[in-house]
Amino acid sequence: MTSMPFDTRLVLINGQWRSGASGQTLPLLNPSDGSLLTEIARGNAADIAAAVDSAQAALDGPWGALTAAERGRILLKMSALTLVQADELARLEALDVGKPIKQGRADAVAMARYLEFYGGAADKVHGETIPFANGYTALTIREPHGVTGHIVPWNYPMQIIGRSVGAALAMGNACVLKPAEEACLTALAFGRIALEAGLPAGALNIVPGLGEEAGAALSSHPGVAHLSFTGSVAVGQMIQAAAAMNTIPVTLELGGKSPQIVFADADLDAALPFLVNAGIQNCGQTCSAASRILVERPVFDEVRARMAERYAALKVGPAMDDPDVGPVISARQREIVQGFLGVARDTGLAIAAQATLPADLPKGGCYVAPTLLAPAAPDHRLAQEEIFGPVQVMIPFDGEAEALKIANGTAYGLVAGVWTRDGGRQLRMARKLHCGQVFINNYGAGGGIELPFGGVKHSGHGREKGFEALYGFSSLKTIAIKHD
Ligand code: NAD
Image 1: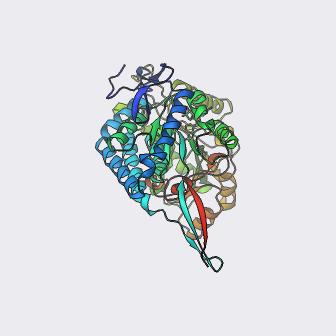
Image 2: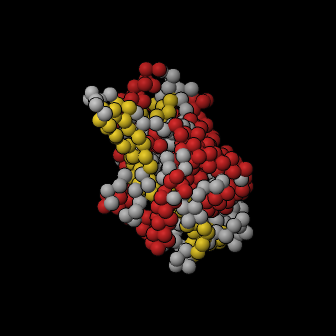
Image 3: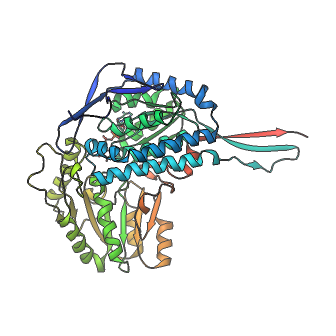
């Protein structure tokens, strides 16, 4: 086992680190070489019940008594501590997720930025006064939901914790966080940062464990007032069903099959790095990965050739070596991705480029060669389903109408990118794309912490990031006072 900076086998409940109720642990593997990294607690329904009780007690006690400005100051302190520890957090993420060091560090900086943004926003969420009948004053106030449940995946633990727990705490909720069983370390480190920053006991509780045990217990607990979930469509649907039984709101972020659309008049030099990076970043395990590249026919061959050059230059390797592309999270995820590549082979989908896997990669590592497939038909399985690996498909099109039909023609609708110099087309496309975010002549806007984010259709609903998330983590109360 690799030496860890803290005991990783504990849960955080009521400000105390303790063993889980079952006393059992789960192994945490290093995807770069398959070795046993450490163990984590196998939290269960009893731990979740204790965590929810502790969160409710915090709301009824010191945490609930703080002013918005005081909550904000604690979040700002958490942000500062996160930045101080960014290198260590990046190391933990590299070991745990297989994320190249530079990308892990960027995630730590992003988490700090979320905490800074929401810390600053905590005392700036206002209600309104409403012109109403004579003799009345009517107003609205925003209140926390109460205990919020956060079920987080393994691909971007720090960013997702920052945006969801950060916003929920800023609004005065008390949180129960269930990190993914494949990657827990930075979630546990986050708990330590919160305590060091003076977050009152119980405002944040962390229960690692299996999805079907701790996750299911959290999503069905009657003491939880709001759930936010990021992960697969299948589990998202289960979470929504569980939330329905308790009649509580849920925010779902369920991934996508996001396109980047390249018109013949685009600045290709500007587009090229985004076209490839947004597909292979975090080994393609990104909800907003640009896994479909739609290219107008006159420039299709040129874009394919130039993307292929970039693929050939990609360095794949262990996360601690800081390559362009690390391993996928697990042997299971590698099998999923290789299954898709098998379908590509069996259906004659041409490989336009494939990075070479170095011969000396660690044997137990979960590596997949980044692969560019082109041309694909828009209805091909690999052009429709989320692969969650370093695989992109290219689809040719003729004109705006066909580009829109293809772009909107999947079950998902998370993000889209449009590359064109034509201003009218930029706006027409932005208005007609059926998704939650559109980027014109860029993709992702460098993370865009301030920019509301979320999907339509199977990509989910509700918005995270930006100010919008604060509305999602609050409940609006209307007060009408009759004074005449
Ligand atoms: P998953 O949806 O099973 O896991 C995500 C989180 O949900 C984890 O914390 C897990 O413990 C929890 N969970 C699992 N079952 C649960 C249940 N019954 N009740 C409550 N919580 C539960 O995702 P996965 O199996 O890790 O990955 C499978 C696929 O999901 C991937 O190939 C990818 O397509 C997709 N995915 C998407 C995202 C995203 O960012 N949208 C993230 C991870 C995975």
